[in-house]
Length: 116
Image: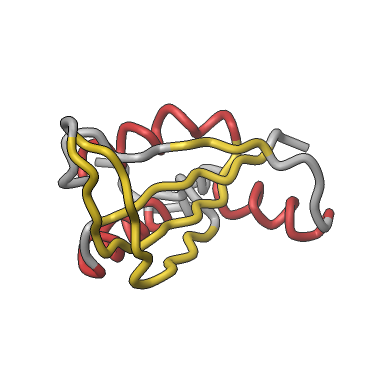
């Protein structure tokens, strides 16, 4: 069994959150991405206290994919410095943890598929 991670990030719009989530799942970098809408964030940025409405993403993946997950978020994300935090999963339902592995593994090409 691989080491699982929850990767957390915030997006500035529902559209951006959907783009990031879809990219990660479609490219098998995450088994699932939970999107929590309209989180109010208070933070310090460039010397000022700011407030923003954001969409929180909870990304379920495994540690071996973290560099690719981080790179994908940084490429798609609109923020200059996006929040990207990886939290190791200490325990979980074994069947769910196995599902994360199954959904993030590379898929072998079907016989007859043309690789491009």
